[in-house]
Length: 620
Image 1 (cartoon, helix red, strand yellow):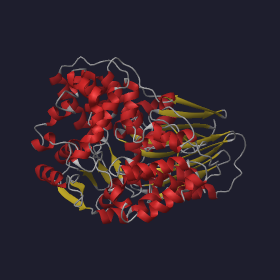
Image 2 (cartoon, one colour; image 1 turned 90 degrees about the vertical axis):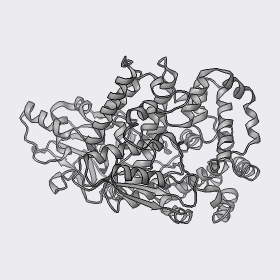
Image 3 (cartoon, helix red, strand yellow; image 1 turned 90 degrees about the horizontal axis):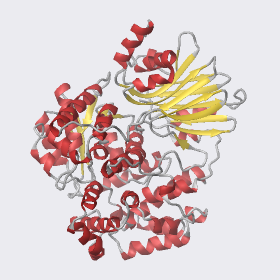
Image 4 (cartoon, rainbow, N blue to C red; image 1 turned 60 degrees about the vertical axis):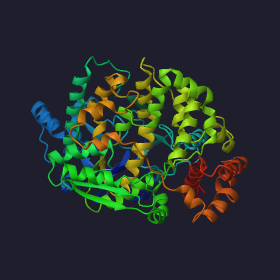
C-alpha cells in the first residue's frame, strides 16, 4: 500500500523545478512511510512512497525499472493472485522475476501483455506504467475504486496523484467546480469523475487511461452489470457464495507484516473475522466502543464474536470527549470535502489498530452487495404495492408529528417514516436519489445559486430487476465515492492497509447475477449471506438490528462548539464571504436548526464546517 504521484509533459521537455514532486510526495508520506523514490527524465517524473507489505526488502522499492531501463512502474495496491501470475509469466515467456513482490509481477505482465494483463489481476490498485522508447503511459484504477487515482489534464501536461492535496502541489487552477459543490451538499461527498476543483478529476472505477502520441484517452476495461442471470437454485447459490467468500478472505491473508481484522460485531465483519480465524492462528481483532452513546455501542457483540472465534480482541473505548479532542487532527487530514461524520470513527479505529498491525481486513462492500441498508428494505417495501404501501404513501406525512433524529429510537422511526413517505410518491430513479441524499434539493438550492439535478449525470442502469439496479447504483455512487474513499483516506492517514474481501470481483460478479429475492424478503436483508454462514456464528449476530454511528454533532454544536458555530457558520462564514454559498441559505439553515433541533440541520451544519475547513486551508 503506497502513494503515487507524477507529471507527464505532453508537448515539451519538463522545465519546472523538482520541488513540485518533492512536495507532492511529502503530502503522501502517511501512505508510504517506509521508503520513497523518484524517476525523472525529459518526458516525465514519477514518484512513490511505500508502505511495505509484501517483500519488505529494498529490492521491491519503487519506482521499479526494468533491467533494460525501458519500462518503469509506480504502483499502489495489492495483487492477491501474483504468485499464480508470476508462474504463468515465467512459464509462458521465460522471464526471471527476482523479487517476491507483486510489483515486479505487474511490471513484467504489462511489458509482455500490455493493458489486457489488467483483466487478470485480482486485487486493488492504482498505477502508472511508462514505456520510455514509445513515450507511452498506462494508468489504471481497480474494478470498484478501492484505491484512488486523481488527475489534472491540461493542454501541455498531465498530472496525477493518490490524493487531491498532493495534486495541488503542482500549479493547477484552484477554481471550484460549482456542480461538484452541489453534489457535495446533497450527498456529503463528490461522485467521480468530478472533484471539488474544475481542473481536477477522479478516474472512475474499472477504467484506464492511455497517453500515446501526446493524446490522452480513457477506456472502461471492466463491466459487470447488467449481467447474465444465474439459474442456480437457492441452496446452490448459498454454497457458491460461501465458497467464493472463503477464497476471497484466504487470498487477503497473505502478508509479510502483522495482520488482523476489524470486528464491529455486525454480520459482515464477523463473517470475515470468523473465516480469517480458521486460516490464521492468533488472529487479532479490533473494534471501538462508545460508552457515552449506548444506542450505538456494539462493543459487547464484537467481544462475543471474538470469544466465539477465539481471536485476541482489542476494544478501544471512545468517549465523546475523546472524539471531540481528535476533531482538529481529523479535519486537518481531509483535502477534498467529505462530510460523512462516521469517518472520524474510522480515523480513530485505524489509529488504534495501527499500534498492533499494519494490515486489517474489513467487511466493507457487503451492505451494497447483499442489501444491508434501511433504504434497501424501504425499496423492497415500496415495490410490494399492498395496503401498507398505500397507507404510508397517502398518510405518511403525519410522520412529521414525530421527532426526527438519528440519536433516539423514536426519532429514528420518525425520520425513516418521513423519508419512506416521500420516496413512495416518486418514481424509482427519483426515489433512489431522495434516499441517497443527506440534504434535499430545496435546501441545496437555497445554499447555492446553481440549479442542478443529479439525474443530469447520474443514471440508474435498467436490467429488468429494479432491486438489483438499485444495488448497482449504490456500488457506483455510495460505495465508490463515500464508503471506500472514507476507509482509504482514514486508514492511510495512519499508514494502515485495509483489505475488503467482499469486493473480490469474482464474488461481486456472481452475487449480481442472483435474483434479488435471494438477498431480501419481507423479514430479512442479506438473506443469502446470513443463511450461508448461520452455523458459523452466534445467532445474535444475525438477529439484531443494524446500527450506524455518527458523531454527536448536535451536542457539540450546543455545547463546546456553540461559539464557533455562531461565529464561523452563522455570522462570518468564509463560503458566504467569497460568494460560494448564499447568506439567505445560511439564515434558513440557522432557522431550521433552532426550530427542529433534533432534525437533519446538525448534519447540514457539519457539511458547511467541512467545506469551510477546505476553503481556508487550500483555497483562500
